[in-house]
Length: 386
Image (cartoon, rainbow, N blue to C red; front, side, top):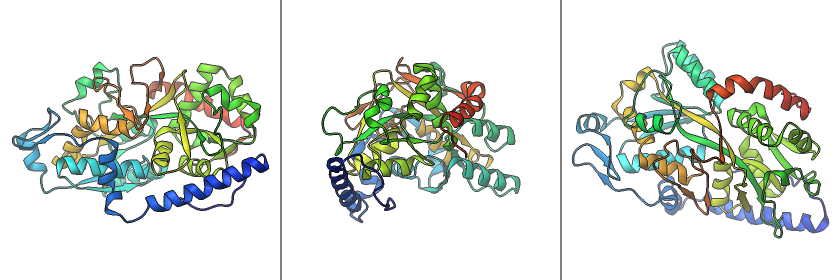
């Protein structure tokens, strides 16, 4: 459940009342969503996002007509489990794991930590020869490169790597993107009931001064990608205009989305998946996919030395890049890496596909070229120490 905090900012008596109503409504809905109903299990929620796939296990594992594992691999995977370390959001990973297990019958043991803490733990365990993970999902390709150099990620090629190459996706020897993280914008729909914001430039409109929420660039790779997109699309002056809004700066996406749902801020740049999950759970949040598009970054996935010897982990990697796995992450508000699965809707929203001109990806090469300088510039513009 989200933490409860005091309502901290509104700009008028009328807006205060509306926002307080949003707070009460969101609290009631979120409490309901967190209940113990059998209809609200991760498996049930996953089924609501995307209709169940067609699974055939008569000769290995085939899902929606695409072979995930031949008979030898699938038989070897049965009775084993996958140990997954992930830096992705807990709700998103719970749903992905539930969907994988429902389609394959293979259980997953999940450990979720922020990217930097996960890296510290995994590198420490690996150095001591006690790494527990079979598969690791990260949110920053720079960490993925370090994992490969340290031998923590090892080469593994799925049956769908040719599909990645055809989509011009990164195919590092030691890791591959399981999907793309996307940043867009959102607003509190209980506050902005008329003429809501609908584009990136609205973030700098003086009428929203004091109501804007942003996440610190130091939080992770997705925020570096957002800053690079903003600079390339609108110029460095866009950061100055954002700073002039006196934005509230958050140290995590989840706390920002919670504050947006409570009405503490009324407009924000957001991780699409996180905000979509909150809206799905009843929060008064509406997402915006601006005409200029969205920023994106890679979500690295790789097998460890332990995982490459685990048939169940191999099935997980294969499934992650299958049409079924890609369509499911698309239904959660990520962008599939494969471009041959077609557009995927996340509820009422349709994000640009990875081959769209509205999809602005900062890949590993872009991180190496821009991330350090962009972070220094962002800190200076927002007078941020952290």
